[in-house]
Image 1: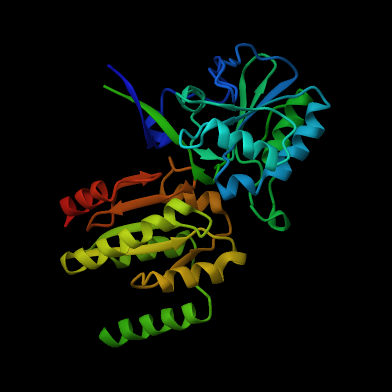
Image 2: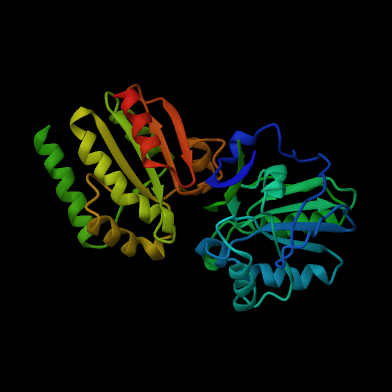
Length: 190
Length: 157
């Protein structure tokens, strides 16, 4: 076997140059559903798509579950597509499926077993979110909000980016630091 | 000097006993690195909610105890929210983490994160290694083999 998948945590900075820059077109995502079937995202529709990297095990990711559910309800009603991805190779499909139910998610959660989506977008943490506009251009990457504690939130950058894209305006803050847990990636080794 | 050090340790112990850590912003961080010139510094950003961080702590303490005499200085900085400060202090105390224990307390967390390493998202676990001149030479983001950390530290001692 020439290649095998090994678990390791990879610093996104190592991927500099391979990741999509703000204002650049985003390629397809090679995701899988929780039954292990391919669930590629090959085309970007309008008015916008949110890709959210989440984790079944990361407490910081889970601290944002209710806020992600609220954003999903509000913005999917406006036509925004949401793609939730658990890219942690140490979290099994069974675990993610159970988590999806316990978290009260009404939307599907996909896996990224080869870290293709995380690598392409440069995702390093959970939760980390991306806003892609109707033409497939990356308009925002970073946190959902700037604090785990809702009472201390000063910036709702994901919401602001979505509002700007939906209004056809430039996004004021295009990049924020997605604090949280590192994504446990897959690596091909020879 | 010894008196100052002893006073500092007593202050730290007193803070820990009260469930408090020493607050640190980017200015304080810069001074802390500068104050440790002449030593190899390993900065551990951790949080109570970060399971892999907690798992690494005893290994980092063991590394510090092993290499302190050769010039290693471990600095633990909690990235917890104020609500978790007491739990963080309790953990530091129970793990017998040597020296002053800090908690990130910046007006702007993004600015602090960028100050430490512009390529760091703030995700945990995260270790940053500084040489004896106070220059950051290595960042370990995510779960890291302690053998790799020790090897990197050993090269700088």
